[in-house]
Image 1 (cartoon, one colour):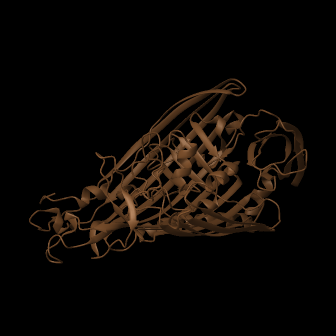
Image 2: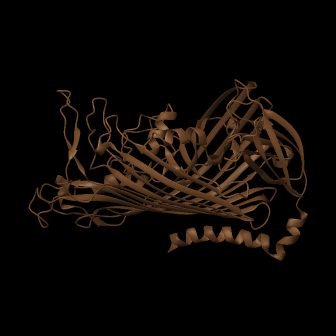
Image 3: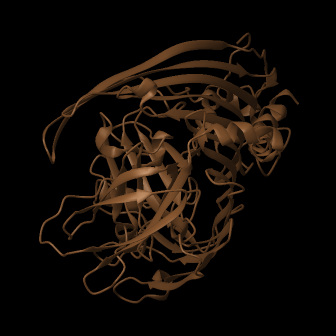
Length: 591
């Protein structure tokens, strides 16, 4: 119950902040703040067509970034009223600057871009930094994969990691399987996020965390090469954040439907696949909503010699599978400058079990292939539900406050076999017991972030906050209902502080500290009989190790001329060892 109260407190914090702003007692504080305004508008080309993915930067009392949606619309604010310089950049167009005056309420503008043969890539907002920091000010390499690139890749890729490997040189080539075993980012495991919610399962890493959402609802992908003080568990190789679709900035109803088919070049029936999706989004005054449903069927994959590539019925495969995804996002802006948003995503992928694998011969150059068959056991499954509740207040204490509470229920069923470790003479003759494992992980957490720009009117920005995570993981043998890894609990508390200094027009410095406080709880448990040759089960005494460690980062960016940037950084990160793999393999008494 102690851990459940942790996430309840996070949700209560969100609601409490809204109520504080809405009650009469909060009125004097709001009245004492500077007047705010909102800048909206559209970006079009010379022919009047919407420019999608253009970056709009407003510089004045504060600096804000936005990216135009499919209608070319953008929205900045609420921001302090005053005079701002709007700069618009888009690939293939000349950049435009315009001075605007933002007074109380909303000011709307239309900006027209002229085509240009060469243009710098746009400077995009980076939600992964938790404070809307622009990519160019970070002392790390950052890639933002936008909507146009995603739309092209979605028509070709069968899994998110395939998309990443096509566009990110430091991401290893995708194996086109449900499991990401053997795939890495800069030689290490990345931290996968969905709208900032961690997807990784470090206590029993089954390598299924890369495929927990359908690509149709991903609006962009933010990739950070390396970690810093605002991120935590698992970000040793870097950060990959899937940002989900947002509602249109206009009040019009936006609908999008797609139907795509795939096939091998021989148009073989087993290689046929298709995907259908529907999305609707609309604003209703202070409310907005996005809903999406998608279904996909994937056929076999073939190599260059028209041989059906071997299907992985143990670790998991995307070939010969079907999946569905239900996505919803509801937003509410009770007062100017505040927003409450609920996101729900339910994803299920299941292999259809129509094919088995025939092993190949490496020495003879014969590859493994797939043949029609009925694999024993239950087909591998990924079943993931992610829910997050976000609260944002852009006028809190002279800065911006954001609070997130989330929960994720993760289940990964693997294929089976008559492996030696599964055998138990009390259940079946040795060598005949067929079983398969299932990873289960439940994460609840909260993330609180406060950011303030121009601290004390100096060119110094502050980001600080506090994270809480509770991860409860176990692994069982599904057909005989035996616990392979006991219910292991990991609790993590982490305050952090990050400072960014604009030392000169050509030099920016940053540094931060994150204090990790972690506690692991392993109960006393009994091992499987198959861990020992004599099939004797042994009792393993539990324990509760804990640790705390400060992690720091420091870096700088030098911009000698516009368009040329040099950066250097030193950062620390951490991840947990695969505790489950260690626990399930214990075979000696007294451990």
